[in-house]
Image (cartoon, rainbow, N blue to C red; front, side, top):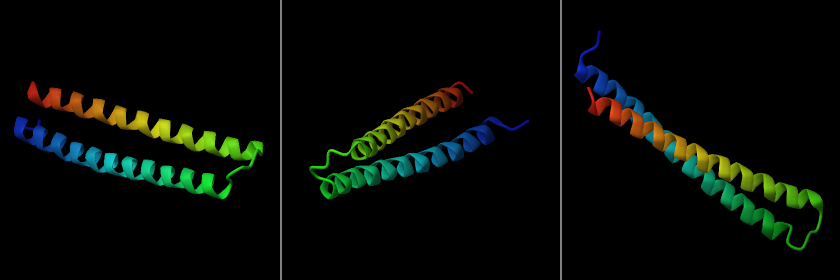
Length: 86
């Protein structure tokens, strides 16, 4: 069985990976925002249903990434609570 110090170190390493994942999520959200702006500029004035669907899909993807970020924050809190109780 691992010692408390080893468990804390392992959890800290996992949390570092989560933090790196959060940075990737944030970068993806920024790229999606840029893509939405580029799409809007390129297709300004278009009433085509596909344009609206593309915007809606990008907005939905951004919302899902935001939810993902929230889930990672909860995971961090739960892991920190666990290690605090060791």
